Image 1 (cartoon, rainbow, N blue to C red):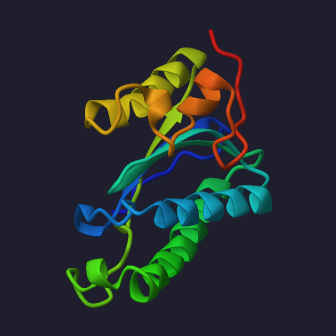
Image 2 (cartoon, rainbow, N blue to C red):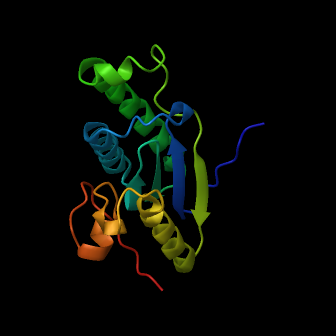
Length: 171
């Protein structure tokens, strides 16, 4: 049975996906830069908007919006495919010690993703708080805006976070 993705209503989508077998492939800053750069390219290509994100060592959360239906799955497919290829090359060429501890050529990402439609400004604010608090809950930083790989710095300090953030009016 195929999983349904509700992408016809042009809602903001809260998306989560993980590294294959929860490996910490996003621990290295260059891997995180690859993920953000690839997302930025896909959003430009598909005229999408990023409302927020957090990159963790083994998974990520992102809030995305597209002006046309059907773009979410296309974006995620290309984002995961391209970043997987580039992270794989990074492992082979620069992070050989870490790569030697993993299986031969495993995928970078789990095949699926979790998608949750955001129907209200209140739910959007809830999801932003949840994902921005992720590094704090894990003990990686003391405050959400201390985590470099998150849109929390944009929301709290007005600082650039590597990709444009589309701030939607909050309740």
